[in-house]
Length: 60
Image (cartoon, one colour):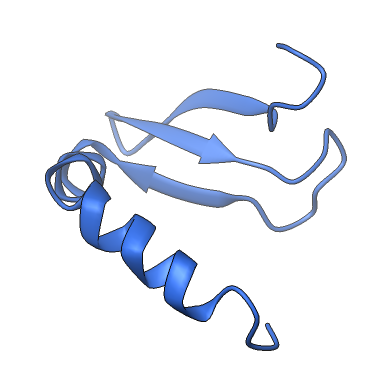
C-alpha cells in the first residue's frame, strides 16, 4: 500500500469474494461489495468520477 492509498481487504461472504475499501486501517464501517457491484462500478467509472467532480464541494 502506498501512503496515500486507502487500505483494501479481500474477503468472502457466503462463499463469494468481496472487497472492502476503508478510509483507514481501523475504519469500523468499510465499504464492502462483491464482484457484481465491482463490475457495475468499473463499467460506470466515468459517471462516478463526473458525479464526484460535480458534487465535491457539497457537504457529505
